[in-house]
Amino acid sequence: MRTVLGCIADDFTGATDLAGLLARSGVRVSLRVGVPETPPRNPAAFEVIALKCRTAPVEAAVAETRSALAWLREAGAERFFWKYCSTFDSTAEGNIGPVAEALMADLGTEQTIYCPAFPENGRAIFMGNLFVGRDPLAESPMKDHPLTPMRDSNLMRLLEPQVTKPVGLVDRLMVARGADAVRTALIRLRVGGVAHVVMDAVANEDLSTIAEACRDMPLMTGGSAVAMPLPALYLADGTLGRDAAKTTSPQIAPGTVVLSGSCSAMTNAQVAAYLASGAPGFKLDPTALAENGIEEALAWVGAQDFKAGPLIYATADPQAVKFAQDQLGVARAGEVVEDALARCAIVAREQGARRFVVAGGETSGAVTQALGVDQLDIGTEIAPGVPWTFATSAGHRIALTLKSGNFGAEGFFSDAQAVLEAA
Ligand code: ADP
Image 1: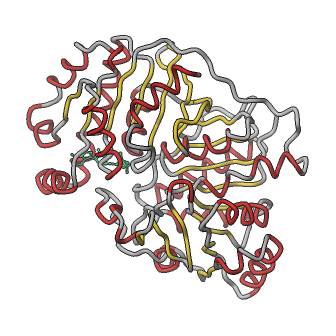
Image 2: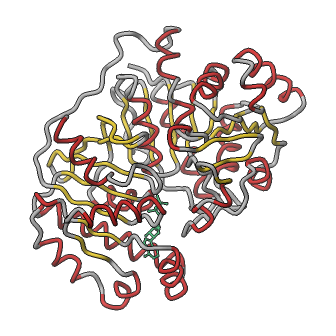
């Protein structure tokens, strides 16, 4: 089997979100945690490499994504997808634009598209402006994100300082005219020297049009949703054989732990709902962790009955996050929390937990790394863009779900456990 589409995601939850949507097609999707050290053996039709480079220094992010690209090319891929968050999480320096330009240079391609829209999760782009539900991005809770506060809603304006070549737009009116019109618009922009094209999309039909128009581009970039139509398109035109391997759902032993390091508005609601349902919970306070260490948290985890799905969380409201960041600095506050949740995950596994529900992109990266997971097979979806995945950790088969901050409904932590029971 040769890889048909090689994907690179800038964080773990982004990678599982993308992998989950691709797996809706029923075709086997494999997710690698970091660039594998060994050359590809039996690669899946869709390979997703999860990096942890959303907030890394630009040079490091570029180097990592280029090495991921090289591995995916070895797996046989000729088309590539650079996946970032549907809220375009980035700073003025990057890393969305600089990585796209580096990948374009390696692939020798002159143009790519940017489409973070995810209508099922309320992310829409109109006239180049990104909306979260009914709010412009810069008026959404993303304005208070701990690491990448988004203070502008216009994707062209956000992208311009990140790239060296001109930025343009294919607007909703053009997308509504169909795939041929979009192709023509892209050619016209390319002739005019526009390398980076933001694509408007407000509904799944827009994404289908864009995917159809762009499916043979060497590089597409965006949120996960614009990639969702690709498997069906590749099956229809024979790029992907009908005999391509299918997804599977293995049986996993019971025992659940919920680890939450996301401070998004939705995760705050999910934590509150889960605690209100009577689940046992332990709150991590970054300042106390930095001062007193994590022994108390580890002892609490060690004493839990994992049948009850205990929750360990640092999830807090923007005011509390700001307080911790003022005390410790942004990076240090993030680190102490990520480290604590990662070590709680190890203790939970040692005490018999086999099902891990994790909230937060950076948090998921830290937890998977601590569990020594380097490859995941994608299974059933719990909420749009959040699947269960299956992996091996210290010789045990485990199930993991890695939820990006704003994803899932309020009942997500319970929903996830119910979905796995039913699988
Ligand atoms: P999301 O998917 O919502 O962006 P992430 O896990 O990627 O979630 O990012 C949240 C960041 O905030 C992590 O680095 C985490 O360690 C940090 N964090 C979590 N809780 C707190 C807190 N109470 N105070 C400060 N930072 C926190």
